[in-house]
Length: 137
Image (tube, rainbow, N blue to C red; front, side, top):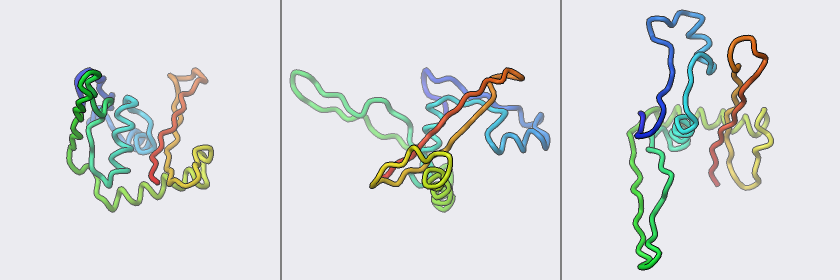
């Protein structure tokens, strides 16, 4: 789902996806998404499979009257099953507990993460790395 002011994703057309492309897509290559799209996906996993529209502002507080106006939480339905969500969360927690995301450990919290590395163009020897985490206490 694309929101006002957000860039779209770049995916290979389905008719152009052969066996090699499907294999590389399965581990995160051959497509591009925005950081907010990544956070939305990880949040859906952390929310038991339910997608919630991202929001930057939680509430507005009138500086004179101190009146508080909450920005409502908008849900977009279930995008994966609760069972799948729990399995993926478990895998993400193992990334932090015993994998490449060990530096994200925080005592007293359940932390899950997903590391990523992608090539910055063809034959440039430059890479883009990322780490996205979910957290509950």
